[in-house]
View 1 (tube, rainbow, N blue to C red):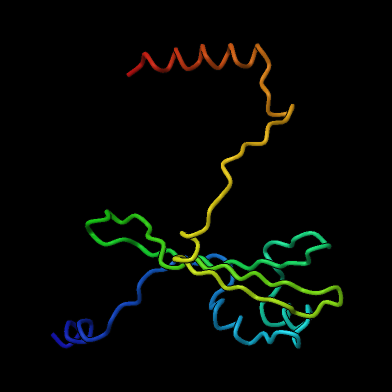
View 2 (tube, helix red, strand yellow):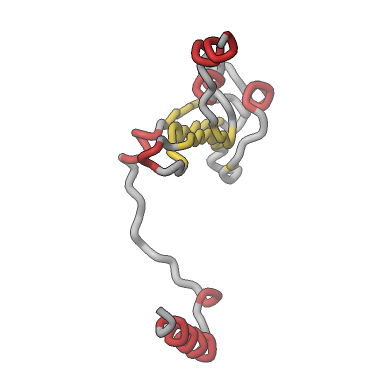
Length: 142
């Protein structure tokens, strides 16, 4: 009976799946504009996930936290946090700008609908023909 009372009183920790830098927002607050440099950023944040070209000199860090859903979600993963930190440096490696984007901010972003065509993605006549036969074969199996 005592064991049952102890189990009820302690709260179990929610199972989380994390990807990227943990506590990204707290770490980003330690970076000071016009004072921190690339070495300070690497010491605090680690290596960047994405580096822009040498002209822009932007570094991008990601944080993503998934949690298990409740009973009505049938245990599927739910996105709790999806944060992005974009750091811009000048030509001397000093931090000039930092932008922190949360999950709500990412919903407001607009993406281009343009499609880039190139010769490598073009399928030959034989590939198109075989793909259409494959689709017809598997569509009748329902």
